[in-house]
Image (tube, rainbow over all chains, first blue to last red):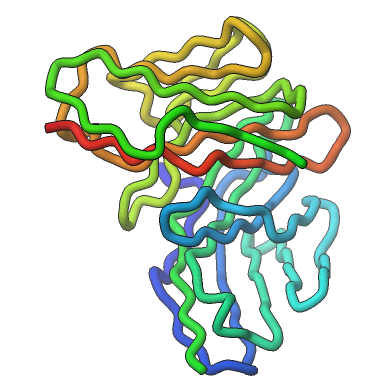
Length: 112
Length: 114
C-alpha cells in the first residue's frame, strides 16, 4: 500500500514559468514532509521540508505547501530553470519511528 | 561536509551469489536506511536501522538482510541474489533527535544480477 503517492510521472514546463509538483499521502501519523531532487547516476539531494504543523515553507525559488485536510502537498518552483530538470521525490517521516517513506517520483523537464 | 559512501558504483553478480553492499556515514547519525529505486516505483524501503544492532523491516525486506555492528556502517546483504534484485540501491543516513529530519544519500550502487 503506497502511503506517499505522486500520481504524475512527468511534467514539462517552459523556462521562467512555474513548476508545480504534487504529492498525496494517506497516513495521518506523518510529522515531516520532504522534497528531494535526483539526477541520473546520483543519490537524491534534499531540497526543502515542512513540518506537519505548518502550511507553508519557502526557500528561495522553492515553496512547499501543505494541506492537511486534503492530505496533499505541493512543491512550487518559480521561476523554473533548465537545471531544475530532474526527478523529484516527495517523502514523509512517520512520527515516533524515524521511518522515511518516499513516493514514486515525478520527472520534471524544463525547456529553454 | 556531510558524507555517505557506498562501497561500489556498479556491481555484476551471478544468480545465487551472496552479495554485500556496504554504506558508511561520517555524521554520527543514528538512523540509516537502504532503498532500491526502480522505474515507476520510486524509492522503496528495504530495511532501516535506528541504532547499532537495531533494525526494522521496511516495505520490501524479502530476500534481504542487514547488519549494523558499528554506528557508521550499515550493510545490506542479498542472501542468494536473483535477477529480480537487479536495481539501483541507495543508502541514506538521516538526522535524528529534535532536529528536522534530513536524509543524506550515497551515490548509489547499480547492481545487475545475471
